[in-house]
Image 1 (cartoon, rainbow, N blue to C red):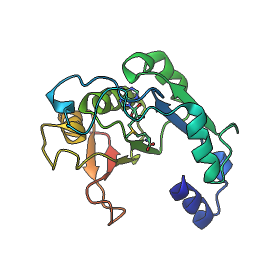
Image 2: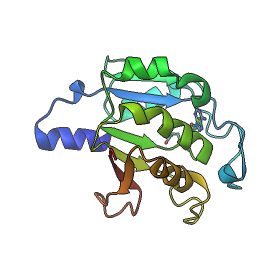
Image 3: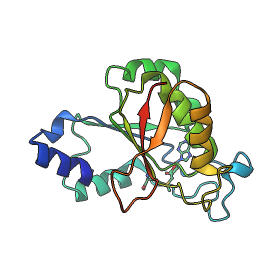
Length: 174
Ligand SMILES: C[S@@+](CC[C@H](N)C(=O)[O-])C[C@H]1O[C@@H](n2cnc3c(N)ncnc32)[C@H](O)[C@@H]1O
């Protein structure tokens, strides 16, 4: 949110023209689905924060979460990320996606769901890239690698912020 505010200030854009979608169970992490999710520091139910708690955080950043430019989408991705929801969101495809769902399985679900509406040049930030010490067989790195092997577009590391090594990617269609 601070990055978006700073970008809008620099480019003389109106912050309220941007739509911010927040997808979360708001009940914390689901149970791990396999070894690829299995970091010892995570467990089912962890990070459970209600929408009201998140709204308080947003207000601290001097934004109004009840204004029309925020939308909260509550539920587990495996249930809520339907083709119908994607169709409805296709009018406002994402420019920036921040992924912070920890697990391989959750990240894979989100990437597969987004793929049909991703514009070329959309920017991704992955918060959990280093949580498995760079293993290509676990977590977000595995989900990115499988996404790239599908042959329907690639996520390429994009070092836009030097202090976030390998956490930013840019999408381009194949
Ligand atoms: C480390 S927390 C980050 C939350 C938020 N981005 C933040 O910085 O406060 C990980 C979040 O991923 C969500 N999550 C992980 N897998 C999910 C899934 N399959 N469906 C819905 N939410 C999921 C959890 O509910 C949790 O809030």
